[in-house]
Image 1 (cartoon, helix red, strand yellow):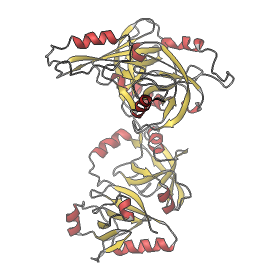
Image 2 (cartoon, rainbow, N blue to C red):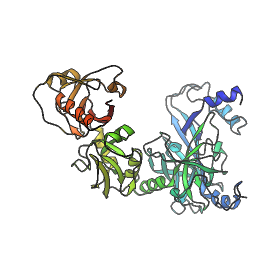
Image 3 (cartoon, rainbow, N blue to C red):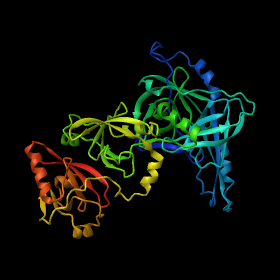
Amino acid sequence: MTSNTILRAARRTFIAGAAALLVSAVAVPSFVTPAFAADGPASVADLAEGLLGAVVNISTSQTVKGTEGPGAVPMPQLPEGSPFQDFFDDFFKNRGGDKDNSGQKVQSLGSGFVIDAEQGIVVTNNHVIADADDIEVNFSDGITLKATLVGTDTKTDVAVLKVDPKGHKLTAVKFGDSTKMRVGDWVMAIGNPFGLGGTVTVGIVSARNRDINSGPYDDFIQTDAAINRGNSGGPLFNSAGEVIGINTAIISPSGGSIGIGFSIPSQLASGVVDQLRQFGETRRGWLGVRIQPVTDDIAESLGMATAKGALVAGVIKGGPVDNGTIQAGDVIIKFDGKDIHEMRDLPRVVAESPVGKAVDVLIVRKGVEQTVKVTLGRLEDGEKLASGEDGSNTDQDKGDKAPAVSTASVLGMTVGELNDETRKKFSIAADVSGVVITDVTKDSAAAERGIQPGEVITEIAQESVATPKDVMDRIGALKEQGRKNALLMLASKTGELRFVTIRMD
């Protein structure tokens, strides 16, 4: 590997979303059975021929107001030899004397696919059509139709469009089951890279359940099929010609394919598409809890054999479980029959559940497993409720106020009574109760966990504390039990909760 190659690799960037004038991102589909030769299928021509008609090119335009001069919209970085190089050279060169602030037209290219030929329903990425003034759908037979927006979902980057076929016979494809895809399965992607419509690429499923930190429900299929700018919104097919993913992002040092692409799994996308078609918006289930990961230290503190599930750090007031059904300190390990292996599993599983559905939730409370019944609310309503919160709407054990006592030092912290004086000193909300941390020793176990003066200890090992003596007693009891860690529930100045574990040895 040359030094230049190493430098290029070091500059690797993550690309997700539309570029200024060309949209980018992609992923790959699977289409071959184990019976095929080790080198792959002999040919995918028959499969591709039947699917090309359902894959469309999407062209959008947007007026960017307040632009001035040639630097307002940057020249896109096209690959060497691109057929669009001359067009963009002329376009940007001729704008040098334009000082009109009325705006410039910015164009974007992407991909999509038809899922309902009679209704003219097209699926693509939200970032392909975001903020567009005009949307046109170009079909493989040369037809171009104006599209209207049915609905979008920014959380999953999915958008649904509608065109009027006007007597034209469209070709549609259907969603398949992405949960059946295995690492190593062959897949096929069709899209519009760099405006070159009807481009077919083949690869395998490289990985599943990828979290690339693009949204709250990340669960991407990773593929090595060649996908480039303009493939965003295109389909990823399995061997049966079913859509098992929507190509949405790539990792690349230059904007071109290096064999690492990501696709939204059909299991997630199909439900979003159905809701957008029916309601024009999403209607997701909502549990009404704040959660955090269960680390090894937390699991040990809770008496759990393994670190799994989602730890409830707080309950939203007015939410579905603001009746004590689920409490701060509970660990959710199964939801509606689905195992919750790690924290990020829970939001996705809950969101995929219908609003108003009564579900069984398996929790660990104080070391004991138990099942509770919960009726889900609507996430969108919950977001409105949460937007009016200041953090003090978290349900917590208020504890009993004790007489004034002296401060105490424990685990690198100095703790004291939470009274009017300390509330004023640290600006602690009136409805926060517990024992205030007034100082944290540098390089102590507490400092290593990021604990700050002004935070309030509300529980230790899931038992409420109200005085410095309570804190000392609880820590002493845990040491007598042979525990290595103490699990603390801390409240911020505004009342928002979090759990931390502190080593006691």
